[in-house]
Image 1 (cartoon, rainbow, N blue to C red):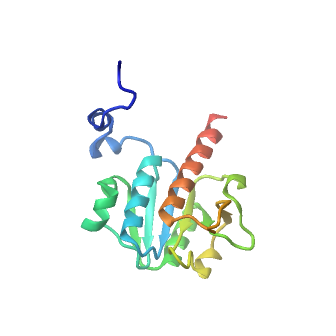
Image 2: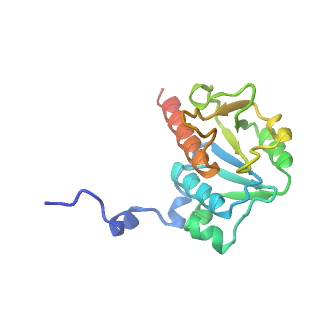
Length: 182
């Protein structure tokens, strides 16, 4: 009887190389990461971004950025596959993104935030995630076009930033696919 799970060697053989990835269309979804202190969270954000086909990652403030061996340990090479840029000031990055006609979606619990699953999707988009404790700065929050949050049903008020980035990225990629099927 054949095994149910696909072996790791089979999965590795099917994945594109860094050269081939250049020819795979990226989705019009970017991430702005503000002051994320854990290098492992940053590496995990790279892996999720690679998985859902992000166009770009903007790393700002004291967020770690490649090349770093500790980041690579979690990113596992995805930091070489996903386009990224380091911009010291998150406000400068946000203004640059908006000037390019990209909608900013704040992922944060604010007085006006709505569930992520209810927002109107106007692509291209760039979603913003922030510090593990304090979230996204007030100044950057004010620049966002839409405030969205992930509904929480348990005792905790939020997800880990890298988990949230993966959830948001995959939800936006799903919404983009649906919008473009019409």
